[in-house]
Amino acid sequence: MHIQNVEFLISAVSPQQYPEPNLPEIALAGRSNVGKSSFINTMVNRKKIARTSSKPGKTQQLNYYQVEDWFYLVDVPGYGYAKVSKTEKAKWAQMLESYFSGRSNLTLALLIVDFRHDPSKDDQAMKAFFDHYNIPYFVIATKTDKVKKSQWNKHLSAIYKGLDLESIDQILPFSAETKEGREEAWEIIDAVLAG
Ligand code: GTP
Ligand code: MG
Image 1 (cartoon, rainbow, N blue to C red):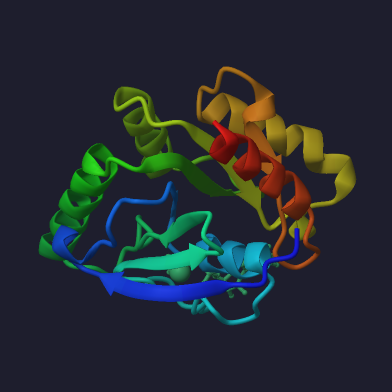
Image 2: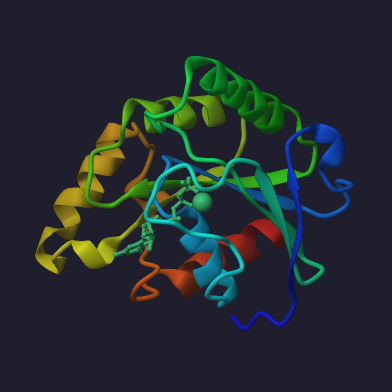
C-alpha cells in the first residue's frame, strides 16, 4: 500500500477536540511502549510522523492522523505504565472508556500486544471491553523480529489462549523493524473500510 497523504490533525485531550466524525475511525490500544506509534509509522511509511520513544508513556493524548480521505487513525496513550499516579491512571481510564464506548464513527480497534509475552491483565481487560461494547477488533502482535521463527507457533498460541480469542486468525504477527505483516494489516483495514 502506498500512502501519499497522511496528516497529523490534533492531540486531543477532550471529546470536544476530536475531529468531526465524518470519516471512519481506527484506533490503537495497547500497553505503554508496546509499539503503537511505531505501528502507525510503519503503516503509513513515515519514519517519524508518530513520535516513538524507548521510554514508556510517550503518547499522552489521543493523537489523530488522517490517512488520505479514507479514515482517521488514532494513537491512544498506552496503559500499564507504572510510573503514573493513581489520579492520572483514573483520568486515563475514564478518557479511554468514554472514547471507546462513545465514538460513533469508530470502525475498528487494533489491540497491539507484544509477540514475545503472554498478554497482560490490562490486555485481557481491553479485549473484554471491546467484546462488551461490541467494538470490532483485531490483535496485532508486534516485535516479531525479536522471536525466532521456530518459536512463532508457541507465541501465537499463548496470545490466542491468553486473550481468550475465538480464532487464532484474529492475530496478525507484525514488526515495525522488518515490516512483517504490513500488507496484511492493510488488507484487514481495507476490508473493514469496505464494510
Ligand atoms: P507509548 O506511546 O508510550 O504508549 O508507546 P508506544 O506503544 O507508542 O511504543 P513506541 O512505538 O514508541 O515504541 C516503543 C519502543 O519499541 C521504541 O524503542 C521502538 O523503537 C520499539 N519498537 C516498536 N516496534 C518495534 C518492533 O516491531 N520491533 C522492535 N525490535 N522494536 C520495536
Ligand atoms: Mg506512542
